[in-house]
Amino acid sequence: MSALPSGGPVPDVLVPHWLTAAHREQLAAVVRSALADEALHPVAAILLTDVLTELHVAAARDAVWPSSAARVRRVTGWAADVLPVRLSARELSSVLTLPELAPALRTALCQDRP
Image (cartoon, rainbow, N blue to C red; front, side, top):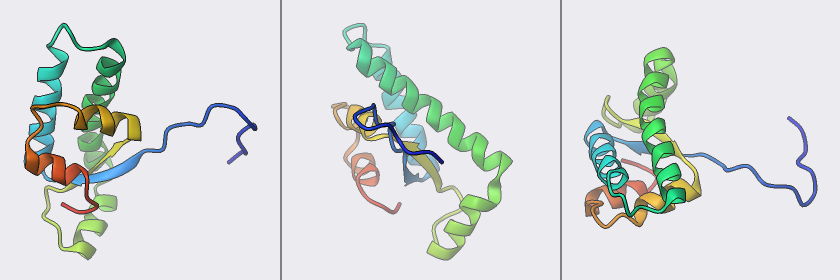
């Protein structure tokens, strides 16, 4: 690990949001719907594309390294379909601005547990 140069750009910190399979499916559908809108700002489109990518990566990560999430689920008592979806603050903000986001999904994204 190295120190960041003073005054340089700070990399985004990815924070895990533990979502059920249903929440991940809902999130993917809302993001795809937003990406289909031609009026979507290009920066928002990039951030939402990153969210969609992370949803795929979360599933792949669990397929390759299932024990990491399984340990957390076992300790917390969460269901077997709960996975961490790692989002930056900018990605999360872009999702939370979507008016089609269901209240239950919005709540799941804004709390530390499913």
